[in-house]
Image 1 (tube, rainbow, N blue to C red):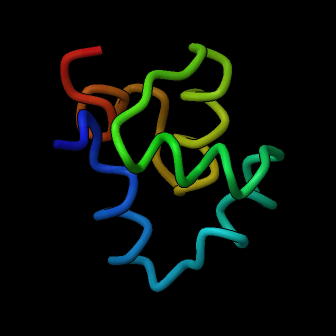
Image 2: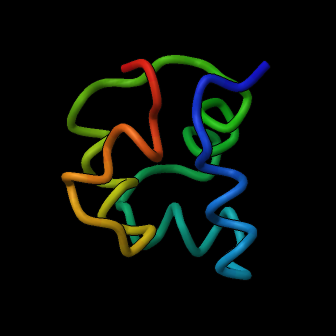
Length: 66
């Protein structure tokens, strides 16, 4: 079970994994791993939150429980 809402939010924005990866300056494989529920560094979380167009204060909405 995924531990975050990255995939849900990304898909609601009609954004591809590749596009999110480009915007966040991470690899598409990293996006795949995170969407599958793997953990990531705080810096990677920050990049993804911002690339999704969210504010850093929305961290708990994107990555609940982290």
